[in-house]
Image (tube, rainbow, N blue to C red; front, side, top):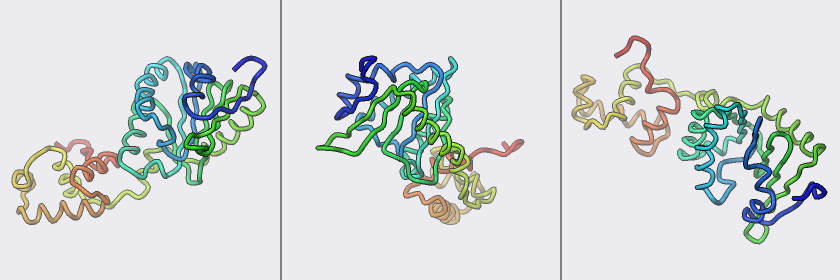
Length: 228
């Protein structure tokens, strides 16, 4: 993109990277993104690699804000990825309303607007126009202020689980057999398995592993202070 050509439309991710990728590769002060979910880019490996690079940049002062719709929490893989983003310092919020395919703004100097697919590839508009960027950034800020922090959103519908239920959920992460876990909890094997089934229903989990992961996301497996 030349100095005179401040706005271009490209077809497909490869052309976007070739013609405008340099504008977004090394943000200095702020990187913001709004998208309906995490499956907006076809090359998932690039998305996962970006998480590793982000940690060092956040430590050096880069502000990263990621805004998604609730669709991003539709499956376990996406939820785990969002929580991973939080661990490296990104701010993540969930918006109740629908969001576009994807909007990226780097340092308020460059912006990508992703469109719908055309002949199997998405169209992208990349711009360095200050007026366009300022207008979209204002809309992003408004949506951001009305969104909910990821951890708060995940805990909104927190299931009511007693202390014994939480202890049982911790057992699911130990790798113990049902017999050993039941003995440790002082329950009969039949009661233990019944409680496990109840926990899976409460957490809407299809497997014990998924129940353990979901419980961890919601903080249900954390021990209370003073509890061994």
